[in-house]
Image 1 (cartoon, rainbow, N blue to C red):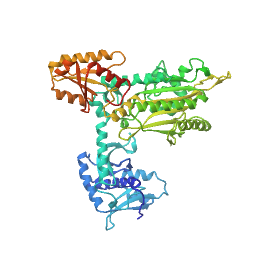
Image 2: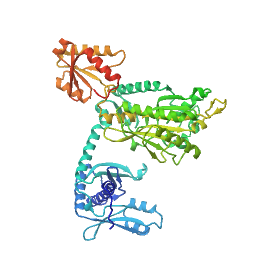
Image 3: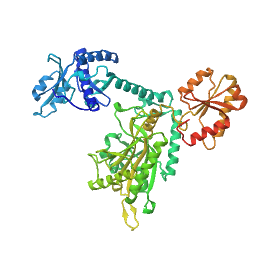
Image 4: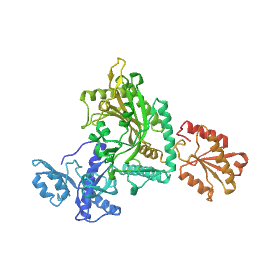
Length: 595
């Protein structure tokens, strides 16, 4: 046996991989006839795929865990052996998934197998695996793992192959780490945008009407309008013009752009119109180019900064669709900057600043940049890729931003900068993207007349700040847990009478706040006039995460005031209606993150 010397963090993936083998050993013992597939370590845990003779449920996980603990406490050794292909096939003759994997290996390749042996040296379990593993199960803390869930998974991720049962689990170095991770998962579940979206009545999906498509409800619509209005204001302020373009285009458009060659699998099938093929758009860029080519341009016109909230449609497999985060139809806060080569670096720097400022307004401060290089499938000469990549690098470094290289992560038409933000739980989300493109101007024969009177090619920068609005809202919901800043909140204030005797005053307060708000800003305020008791109304408003609850009774009616309760239960001093109107107006107009 070879002892592996490494830090605890380095050893965790090995522990998790080893626990996945132990789980498979337990499953096969408890459920005879089960066929095993693969069981890797993943971030924070592990999984194993099985073909069960009969279905299992989450209730069976308790028994599997108990058997796993017996195996761990039995102090079994993990022993690596090797076999030739013929012997390995004989060894796994009854395991259809293992034999498929072995058959794909070269005929002379040594095949690695790990055996679990008890103290007497007897083989208790064996699996096809390259390893590494712990040397003995005593290196695994039997109180530091937990099986979490069961899901369906196609063999090798292929929808045309057999559906298997996947069991997920998590494993850590000690029980304290496991407890902390489970607490984190509990918080993640509480903030899940699908759960919060339903509680706040923001949106819905309807499989029967089309998977991966979002239906925005009135509350979600209010939030979108607030964000989109802000987006437009900021773009005008930063020198952009806003475009509106079609949702479909002839096939030549996508052939010219390269999407049919490099992106067809993510595009929906063509439709016949006037005997010609049309495609629903997966991107907005070719339409913006058509507008550019509608007339001639001089170097004096550049840069042109054109933005669009353009809805696009991309095919995603049903198994990866996930609420707002992975959809088939989404609105992209897209923009294209068409500039001279000399302007490119400064324009990219401006986009980086714009992105950082926007994310800070929404409460995200931990932002990291990734510089994505040329992918395997791409267009354009290597020297142009190298020059473009160097320009992006200079722009990032000029802004003093730390970055990492994302090898092969660029778009097919050019390298890019991706900005990833961390939410309140420390999870990283890829959001803003800045993509350099020297190919589309060539493909669409874009030109401008330079100061020497010659026609030259402009450069084009594709950029999205929030990315998909749907995904942006999914991240925003989970970051705030539904307790949004007042300027975004679908319901900003609720007037709550202490009894029905004060309904009339509550309505007066509501009307007055709306009237005072009708000028510079719009206030989303309602009067809570149901027959429920006061405490029930307050609880309901807290569940709806309304920032301000204005409680009114006899004292308030006599003095023309409101008592102000925040959604977290804290109180503000009572205010005159006019005072509160000015107070909330300042919070909304300054886009404050605090109440």
